[in-house]
Image (cartoon, rainbow, N blue to C red; front, side, top):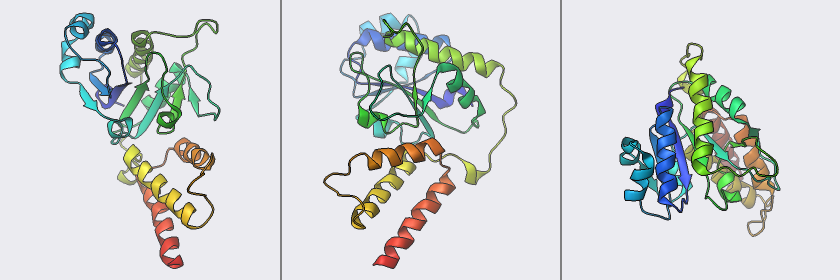
Length: 240
């Protein structure tokens, strides 16, 4: 896939220097799509100083109020996390992640999501993602600063991109479903499960989380999402 189709998404960043250092790390590896989600600091003099000349990345940044908005047009969303979660998520390391991205078509859009400096991503934010990316490190001191983590991830993709095979053009029906399309399906699925009595709307528990994991792991295409939504609509119409 093309590097300009990959967004580096920073969620709730609290220090402008980290945003500038992230821009520098991106620019080193030919990445230019920086997305900020609910930043907790201004992007001003400190950020530009730490960017060390990667001004174009900062100038062209996009800002959103929520992660849902930021990744709406993305076909694949990969979250970075050093924490183990109670519900296991499909996991990649930088090498397997770069291999997966190279296999994707040039029209695909990908988001690599980095969480808050001190607390990372919430479980709710992780559930919006297809995969969780972990960078192997000293188990007794595994916390990387933001720019270092971005540099490692971007380098792996850049290196793999240089030796990738000739890309093929997928059939239009086989294009990956975007995050917004899959979220629309999840909302319809939950509504159907609640109206059928299978789910308690007050206490859905882990069922929807597990269904999310199942479907996101399957990497649904747009055509498959349309089929699944059509099935739900037909069932609902028949019941009514």
